[in-house]
Length: 582
Image (cartoon, rainbow, N blue to C red; front, top):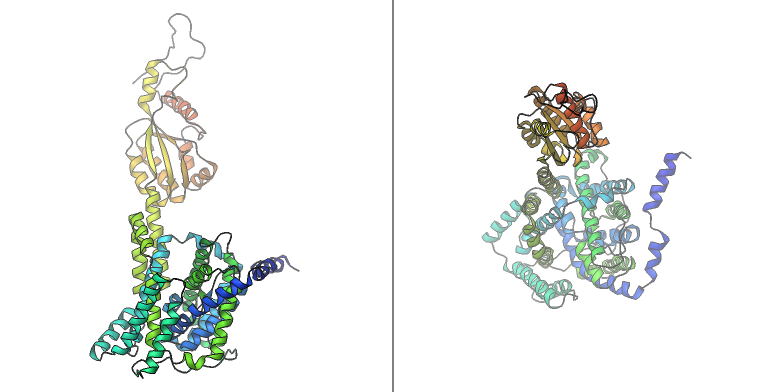
């Protein structure tokens, strides 16, 4: 067997669940079963609502919660993660449905699953830690706004207007409502929102979302509220797996949406798993296994008519708070939802769309952590700017562009902050001008030699300012650059240093360097800067005293200092006592 096959096999085995992962499912079964039941009760209205919002119908949300929830629970990298349809994913799916239809969404889910598995095999999960917190907070705020805006048509009881921009669709829905108000739907949605938000403060562990949906459904049925449109017929069981939706001719055009879905699934799932770790003691998720589990879940869900899935932060938080300790809780949640699909499809089909819209509006409101946003905005101006920019881009553009814009903005501001750290400070040579110098020679050396210490990174973002500062050096004979505190250097920084040395050489100023590190020496040599620093004395120096000695020899050679005596000075009137010529 080739070494490549061995390495691939090892990578595949590393992302599969181990015996230890599965053994934990038997430690506290009662607690896990109770947690799974609670999560299923919370997840039912969310799965229905997100399925409707995606454009594929409530049955697609249920299929995703059952199939993806079970597979991600078994094969994922977190013991506490709960997966299924989410609001963030719905935001991405709406324009895909509008452009490519339901078959396009299912194909995108299949492609995204393959991409997630590939990311797991190349160990891409570890890069989640490099996403800045302001980007995540802005992303979450933007998603909450989009989820809320997407529910406006159903909450107002109007048909969803055409369009794929959430702001435009919302405005058109409000205009339609203003022309023919549907107060029944609006009242049901508002009542569900009020019950959920009030109940969450009063008794956080009670599933008020389900109670509110049941109450709204009962009221709509008893009062014959025809204006409260129901979900509609649901299948009594999951459809048989099928690839009939796959359109091979459209694969090329669906690659870009699939990349967006895979990126969002990876980001949200790893973020949710990190949140679960933070809420517990002793739990630590494996990011690569989590990507692998989400990949399998997204491969399977479209085969049963489900939409792409991710780890769900809200349901995962409920799972942790209700005492879950292993994967059995998430697996139980998926099994209970499957039973509900089988046993209660006719009842579920009568739920008013306005009630589900109220559930999602309340969920969006609860996603916004005001205290966290306030703290992030107060941290630094840069953090606040990145947060706002990411949130606005999420609402105005789409999630993937928003994350890219947020990362670019955060990176640019970080580079700007790092670039400001580079300093060029003139330092005293008193400690280095020791030895057999007369007072007059000491004064001349101090007059003709100046030393500068470079602190911080010398790279492209800081190079221009460094060039201006170094080029303004006063008219001396020798400049010593103390470079032991240069933290990093790239080709741009080396080129700028070369340019500055060249300009100083043209003014008759010799530039010597001390404390150049081996890695920096290689960069300087690659652009020809090291040769300029060695031109006068043939070397660069490990310490400043050696550079001062070389500068002294250079000044003697240039006639600035008198040559040194060949031997010890005679007792009377030494003919070659150190003297200076101006």
